[in-house]
Image (tube, rainbow, N blue to C red; front, top):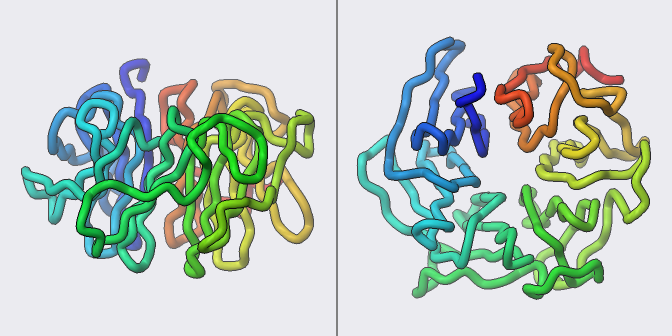
Length: 270
């Protein structure tokens, strides 16, 4: 569907799928294998990107470009409360186990964090210094983010073609995957990152039209192999986001094909 242009996807612990659909200015929700989604329309979602759903069902949503903030909706209420003020669009949004909110600010080249105990709504910069660059303390158009149970921050550093790991309290990152040399073992504009319980990284390799896994055995393509774009069921075209359900299925926001694709991960390892 050419008019289906989602900008974010999230799957909660009950396998409910949430898709941020700015084109219709709604959040589309699929529950329990439904084929027709239920629509939630909190406010105008034009230019909205990041979405995150907490274990209690609260929906956190980026409305930074038009409203300069991240909002939270509880139990599908029609009204929201602001949880963080931001200076632009949150391409990535995450809420950790202590309810700290993280936002990757694409045009600001930084990731900001706000504690629920902060007296102000402004987030504090914890990654990137606000200038596009390739040093360990810098980011260049950060996109997807992930925070593990030890509060390590993983960043898909889009224009540096790499995944950066920021440990708690440190402003200098360690590069886990990628460099400035493109090829089968490198990344080309990564846009999203997820980390499983075993420490494996699942990365959306946007301009290589594939999903890769990085672990102790190195970097491997798992979906979209070889890395050419296409419209067939096993192909991707400029993928942007991924999410997992509790059954081991992986859902991919396949932006160039205007669709959400579902794969059973164990059957799609190349």
